[in-house]
Image 1: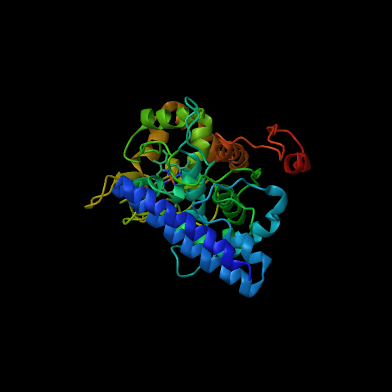
Image 2: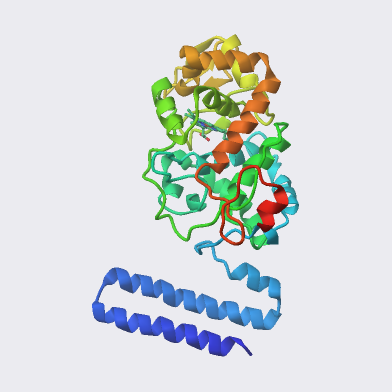
Length: 356
Ligand code: HEM
């Protein structure tokens, strides 16, 4: 009943665009208007479905396509439910070591680690990793699996943004894998495309050493202690030859958050692995564990090493420092706004943050 006038309006608009642009004879613009035409057709189908089902929930879901600009509307989202939905997606015996947790952690980190405090670009706001160019960066290989796995959570929670989801997934994963509670708050918006993504090259290169690590992390605003704490996340997960080219886990318990990465760095003997892949290290004793050249830099550089020793001997301190640094990472460049558009202060109460 409602669908026809609405569909006609959209179709007329799409056709008019086609005519004007055909005059311009611009191929690119033609493709764009074709996309718009397709969108109009999709919208027509969408409207028809709404009429048929009469379901208001459908309107909420379909009204925000992945490519739309979307303001986070925290007051509309039940984040406890979102957390539960994420937790339910973690375990899978057919994937890696039985959990998507480490991949979710890498997702949150790579979504945020593009930030530069020099020009305030990059960071988790915008959720831009779902678009080119970020989706195609070599450093982000494999993270499509995490984004695809989380899609059902996005769909089930109108008002939730991808940008919030990618970061919250990392927080939930860490907590579920035995890590510390990490303060997290909603409010990241979604951009409608990847135009605001910075140029490739902001994420660290595992083949490099201490100077490169400092260049990358100082750019985000971290100090040496925070850098070491953050890289302690390599107690989780593994390297995949079809993603980074490297192979193997760092620890014997890759789905448990711990300070084992630091203990192994100091206690095991590490040698260069002889293989056809990129330069990486293996433990002499079992040859089943690995370290990246960038990991080794943490014990080669005296300032970094100081913190490796601290964290290897004090797991609680590591967990506490990691939680603080990870919270900071996920908030880089994010302006948390109240509903009236003013900014949130860091120490405001939860309710003030939500309702302004
Ligand atoms: C110098 C800094 C870093 C370098 C060079 C680096 C490099 C890498 C590489 C090469 C991989 C393997 C990717 C794959 O093949 O699947 C990886 C995985 C991972 N990284 Fe890092 N990383 C760094 C810092 C961090 C930080 C700061 C975090 C989080 C706070 C982190 C969390 C992870 C996790 C959890 C994985 C495992 C992913 C999985 O199992 O799928 N990394 N990292």
